[in-house]
Length: 240
Ligand code: GLP
Image (cartoon, rainbow, N blue to C red):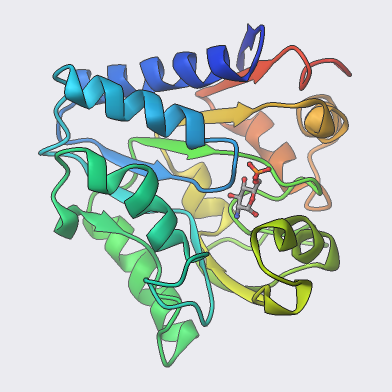
């Protein structure tokens, strides 16, 4: 794992955007795995600037990690809306080349199978962006006694519901389930760009990077991936 230490969030966002841009320049038809959450917002803003300066998204395909079950694309907190507002609406990517699991699918299990097959049909993911949850989740793969391999329907833990309630009017409105790429789906990506900032992630980052590989800390499996670049600010790295 390469670790790039930045002084703050702004620098981490810029560095991560440079890495993503390099991937797109080297392979214009890259399949990029994308993530949501507050952490990548600054990176997406940097990518929008790069697009205005000539970075071409016209041949890029994206697949997002996850989506809440029961939220329509236009819902304020759906990840589809997040992606449209933070990236897709502002760059020259073809809307039909942007993919997320369908949180409104009548049959979530069948939707997971469809999404996994879609990723395979695209030839897999060239570069996957990841953040980390406070409990070590990646995508929405929550701590467990085993690694869930493929795209699956997950019951969110109380910790995640609590953490994500800041985006909703009340805790009750946070969906209890989500569709997420599985651990193997993520680990099959050619490259992983892990972006982690802020002091509140310091302890879990230490566990993920230095602790045992265990499904109790899903991000710890990244220690086994051959090409991970961790971009983290000084605060996030403060426990290492
Ligand atoms: C959500 C997403 C994750 C993300 C995590 C951390 O749960 N499913 O992909 O990494 O939030 O979000 P934040 O960056 O806001 O801390």
